[in-house]
Image 1 (tube, rainbow, N blue to C red):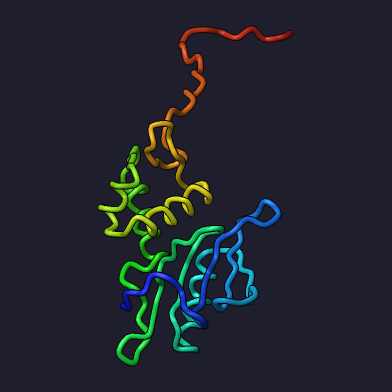
Image 2 (image 1 turned 180 degrees about the vertical axis):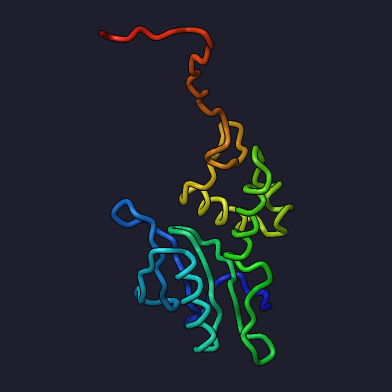
Length: 169
């Protein structure tokens, strides 16, 4: 993949942002006006890769008001190559790790090592999973499944044998 770390004119950019208290994904050619507004990250990444491949440019991902870009795919030796560990594939792998190991808690640097990603990609992934309410951030900085943690105890039933209930007559 090219070593450039920011989009050039004509590259396709997916930007995650909040609009009317909803997370949306905006797709546009850099620099330029918004072209598509998509509801899910999966749709946005797929559309960006398809458009970039058709136009023979790179596809990037960024979060709102951020200058950290994650390369999703680019032309390489005459063919379009999706980056190893594409954002969505890496997010799915991270989800699987948390699902397979209940109680798993990781700090961002541990997620970076586990997934083999750079700091920017790690931050984007963790932010997406928190926004999707799959993960939460603990007070000690660890990320954990949102459902992990103390669970309310179930009510206990009185199952004693030999007690007779009073019947109304």
